[in-house]
Length: 220
Image (spheres, helix red, strand yellow):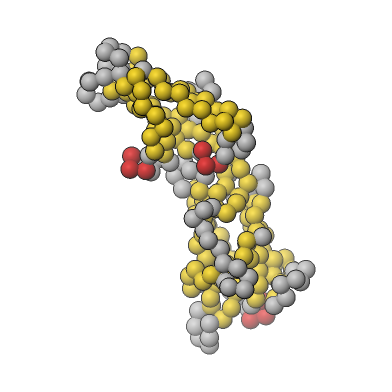
């Protein structure tokens, strides 16, 4: 039965690098008789249906990333099959440090045409590793060009969740108690140790006795 080995830059375990690191080499190989077909796959630890094939060959597959981005973060799995039951496979994880930024899954509205996401909260997806751990809220009232006042983070709750082993981060911003004099334009600045990202959103009343609407207005 074939035995597999998978490495990232000769490391047989998790590897953490900064974004734009030059040249990452993944090697998937197998030893055994008869010679095995080896298969290198990429995924986020969310099940086989979410894995992408990076190459299949006899004995060895080499996959080179010329310059790393956060999109390369995930789990790389090497599997070998030479006809025996229960083929061997092993995985390594690549972690890529990057500052928060808009993910392709998010289509923010514009200042003139705000995108309503939900009533009572905002749900959106970022690319970030590590996950943002600092949140700064600034209130601008009705003046988009105003200097703005930093407000207490107690006015909002923010939940951030890394999606599997990917660089995607699901975010949910919800208001707590927003007084009438604090309705209007805000930004939330989300930061990790690498950098930060700000989004505009509006807090408006829908009507007397009704829930407020919360909008993403634009990405800064």
